[in-house]
Image (tube, rainbow, N blue to C red; front, side, top):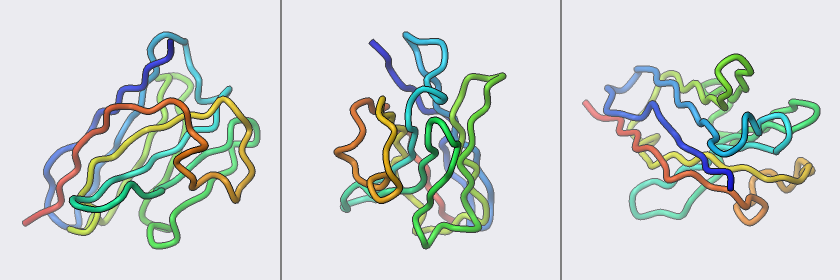
Length: 129
């Protein structure tokens, strides 16, 4: 059974950068066979879409408010799904989750949590001065 493990979270000051990684156990590398995504859950709020990457085309999709600051990518050499986060703001504080779907999702479905059947445990990102 595939399990996802997120790493790279932490406490940073506003304006800093962080790079999150998601690795899969139980299977060599799923980022090219699965649609992969990052979601986040701010304190006291629902889980929300951050970014996704399509399994075949590698096409990406982002939450509108994060475009230009966050970048999702796949690293075949490291076997990870990554999320580069720049110019972090206090409102980016959340638990960040990696998710995978074994289906090729259409763009309009990428932001829907119910489309993903595999989830990691999450990594905490706190942006505070």
